[in-house]
Length: 264
Image 1 (cartoon, rainbow, N blue to C red):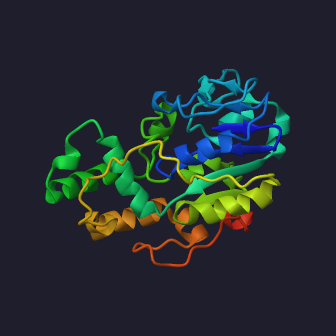
Image 2: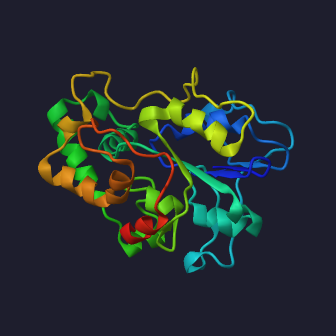
């Protein structure tokens, strides 16, 4: 998560959306007095943070949901950012990312299994495990929200991260499928002197199998495909995603907040 008082934007990071690379690109814009969550250990050597930028975590207690303490982390939601920082940040532009939800679910599965030997298993075993994983971490219940059990594995991160009271608060959502084009547009949107880019940035190695013989569509059966479609319905409708990844995408601007509210 990044918060820039100088450029008046907040970066909210969904998982498995190239968010580490985008965070790195935008962290170069931070000025003294701005805030960045502490980057993961493997990125410390690559992060260039100016002196005076606050790097770390923030805690907040009194008015958090269920009266639990709030910690601002790399993938914290916008509601927590508004709770921790001064009220003035609620007027800042909110920037986030998205990715084809069916593709992202497969990526999230292999990331969840990164400390196992799942990448080396045969495809039938991988597909069966993916289907079990997806159905287990699909729709959230109120207990999941209270205990945050599925926070990093749920299929839909958008509503958890940048919806507040049923309304979408994101202003500009970078689509992984056209990342450089959207970063180019972000320059104009935020009035930046220089275009941010992820060219040449490689912060994380892939957690998917080395073999490219199977596409994300191959991991699905009909029920699992429909489950992702239901859980991620807002993203699919807002940005025009389809299962095969062939449709022309919409965005990156959120153009109809009232429709977002109705879909939440």
